[in-house]
Length: 514
Image 1 (cartoon, helix red, strand yellow):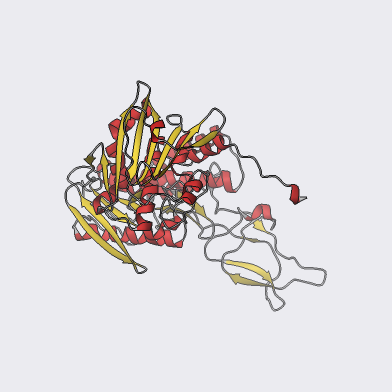
Image 2 (cartoon, rainbow, N blue to C red):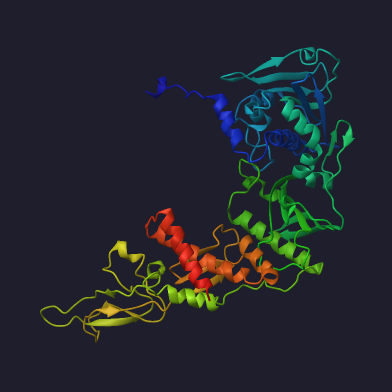
């Protein structure tokens, strides 16, 4: 049967549209980054001397313009040129560079502002290969070009050594490039500019890097990898997308993150410090969108090492205020949390307490021959219910105590035993720096855990000195939200929105009254 099998047809337009959607930034920036990535991969692989990318903009009429990317890397071979026209086909190996997806600038064919790409690769106007890729209403196609005058009918064009991407854009795309091209280059490729990995020219003008005052060139070692970086203490506020740590791979920005460790910077410096770090050793872990890393031990530990290095740098600069970097283990207790604990034992709110289970638990009873011997076992046991799986989630006890098991050598008769929770516990934790939730119920620890590394929690801590009770109010909010989420999600209560909001409001008001 398989001898007559046919390949599944592919809707190429739809496939390119889906691939374009995987990026989270503007179509114009996708085009630029992919054109650069293809050039950089050649620069790296062939160790090109004095590598450069030249960009020119030209307006052909009132509705259409072109952006041209020329790089002086090794031209494509015929085999590479043929593979270049295959959607999702690539001769590159993931981890060796950043243009590994087999899509590259071709994805721009799906953009509403684009739709045509002309590629020229070779040594001069004679020894070259060229093609035109374009989108029709229902398909994407390409045709090879033998005479460059077909592309440049109005002027003489002498092709330089390397590869050129000539991309048609509509008026909106042309204006975007005209107004913001230099800033876009600095945003995505600032590490390359700083380290002079290659030169970039726009309409003949060399692009200089984003480089605020007080720059420090540094490096640190992790797992035998020497990691180069640039750190700044700026006099002006640094844009949020450049704070605090920006990770780059082969010169391209991948992502940024703020300090996740529980530290406190001196007043006025939180928005004025940043660090640009080269983590090319984890290039193989870049996700297809090329603006994030897959989560694994190597990326996680690299980021932890980067965070540690940046904190050390800030310490060296004397920018740390009160040190709160030590892990917090003590339970959070204040008047509001005590009041919350009291309210969760009342009839009105006791259903929200996941640790309060006052019902009796059935244990083996005497049979016709006499009592069944039992032994008391130290530890956490069930506090109620009939032992079914439906009850297990809400019947966990907490604290010191015993539960009972059948034991031939035991000395206690079978009976009903009642166990109750000691009350709600609130534990701060810094174990999960990347956790998106601010707080959650942890039945194993018998507590509500608060993520002290969550950016909003840190912000409320910093605001407390200026605005009074924000930090305590925020803790109270987190506790109530965690309890309600647990009630709805873990116990499958499925409250309607009105009941959820009313319960949240009533409990918040009552605890805040203290």
